[in-house]
Image (cartoon, rainbow, N blue to C red; front, side):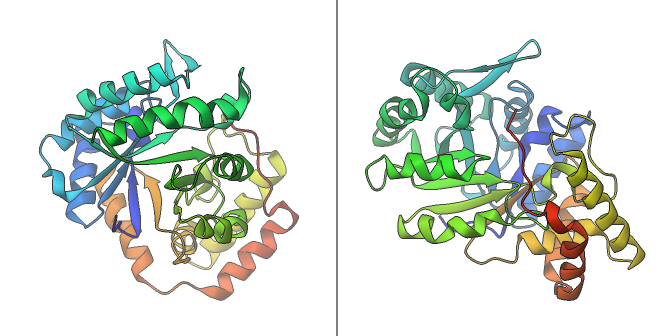
Length: 305
């Protein structure tokens, strides 16, 4: 798969971060594809199926050869409650449900979503190895999906599953909030992924709002000292007339070993803005200044919730 430098994250189409205008969100998908972004990432979990439904309305009007579609199994929800089911049967059912919502007849990358949650359930991560991944590979043999991957916040979990499966079982990984201005831990794992011939997708270049002038929503799980450090960094960038969003996007896309960096928006103008950012050279000195401001909060993470 020859993927674009940045990918379109459809989580915002589920109203995950804030309310949005559905028609404008659909226009954002069109704008992304028109701008050359060719990989779109979504999940049944985002907005409890809403993101896939809204995205499907857009995909009906986009030629199938213009995009790669990545979606997920394992993490769901309804009526305001999160649910998890990594069983083989539910994984297969979920794939077919996603196909229907998205109005497509195959999925380019099917991912086991946030595997750490299965790590907390009966059977642990071994269930992903023994049950979820084999079920998805059965669908691959049938042509329903093209490639199989895993996603998680915790890089160690991704490595554990890969180490406990046969070569080629895991073809890609998606990790989030670990290749950005305040946390570049993903870099430590790139050798391992490459040695195992695994494509790397990184998500959330703004670290779920930490690296923005607007700042984080109340529900953000980051520790307060990290939130405060990033706020100071954003103010520093603003004083230099260099939005921290610009620097964050440039930094996140600066490593050629990462296949694509996924960001989410419902605004067509944000597509153009972010692509314009990465077309410009990055201010390396400002990167150093920001990282000094963040200081001992570098690589401070949090539990997935």
